[in-house]
Image (cartoon, rainbow, N blue to C red):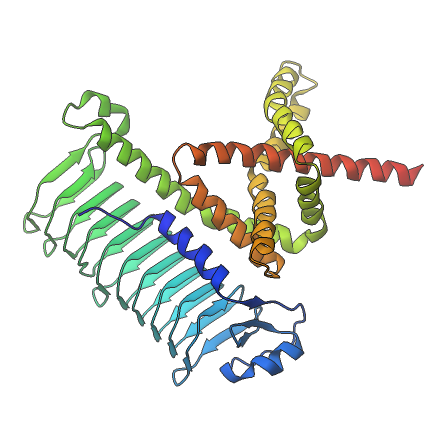
Length: 418
């Protein structure tokens, strides 16, 4: 039994979820009433509507314990999201803090600073947060990535589990396979399948049982209590640089290990670029719009400029480093180079979101448009060969269009001075 729900599943779910659910965003900041029956009144008052449910994206959004929502529930941005009632649909939320103490009869996709799940999610739960606490029930697969992840012994994990973080504590029984990538991991659980870990340190408590194999990296600091029951085989996996010397490891296993590492890195890297992109779009909407127009109207020039910048900038910096006078300039140049490469995904994701918007004839807001485009890019990134080509294309297109827009601003400024 293999693990079947990496970030590709998360991204595919996100694209489908956002596209099939109607979204209308207005710009005013009035107080919103979080009542299901308020859709028509809220649309006139300038609040954010999602399938008839009104929320204020800058305040606390609460689904009360006696409230039932028979539709998908979406919050694009909020300080706090609290779900104590029942949602008969999927929940997609981005907030500073997300608390699920009620019941979600569908999937949960949450991005937050702090996430607490003490209620029930009947389908898949996918959570990205700095601090994650699970003390509830997940009906299907659980995917979580964060700085600290704690899954208490009161939790019920009905299928597979994928965890990636700095510190992970798994105390709850899991019916399926469990995969953990962490700096430090503590397992005190009954695992119904394989337990596969990539950690700096691993502790397996005496009351733990693993129905399948226990796999860990050989260079990890591992402590497996003698009373722990491992029904399968304990496999010490060599570090990647030594895999070529281990005859028992096939090329297929190496490929799977590398693919899993790529998926984990994608999952961990998704949240930072999501947050940075939303901030950039919020603070500099005109600039992002101008870069988008440059990609649309001058794609070839953007590609050529980006390719030239990608190759020539490091060479120019190296030449400047050879001269004492040019060292500060080289440092600034390299900083700008790295910044442009990092933000390239933001610009191309925004453009891709616009393409999705036109294709499906939906009038998405800037933030939703960016999220859609970013998720689409991450889906494509996971496709072998094509993903690598798209990553390269994103870098040169985003970088080139940003450079051209900056040059146009400089030219316009000089023209005004003259």
